Image (cartoon, rainbow, N blue to C red; front, side, top):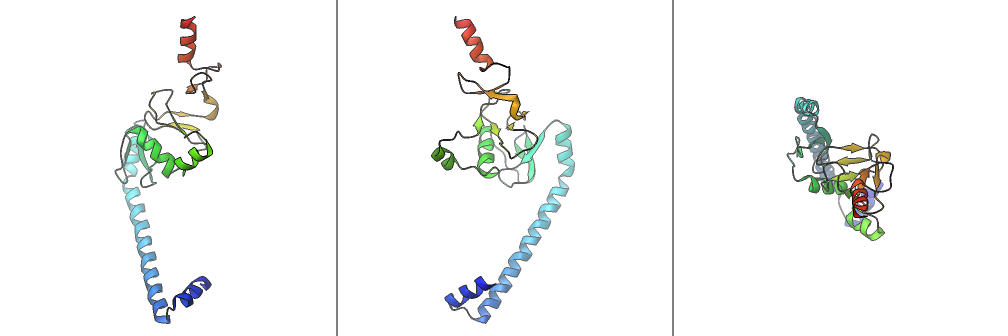
Length: 181
């Protein structure tokens, strides 16, 4: 409250202005509460669809548009806000909006963007979740594949992620080397 008072004094606001401001802030807070009730009611109404999606082998992820746990993978459709798109774009937006990683900061720091080709479906929709997920490290927004940290490695030849085969190179590079000799 002290910060409001000092700002009020600097701006020359009267007691009546502060009262009006308080009423406006109360109205805003009331509307925020109404929105939270609406969100809860909407999520509750979708419970049956969430269960059905999971029974069908789909994965629910936080939506990069509304941040609700309502994005169905591999359908790439949010049941809450109806956001949808190609897996590559959803993965990119997920990194920025949900994980909070900035393209600019990654480039500035010389660090690789955490979006890769999936070793299973080969679409550039695999996201390195880092420490943001306790169950898996990598997630594909195209096929719904999940891998723990120790299950994928970077190929020393081509730099792509591959399922660990106890070698330092992926199967494609291995086949190329064997067949080219």
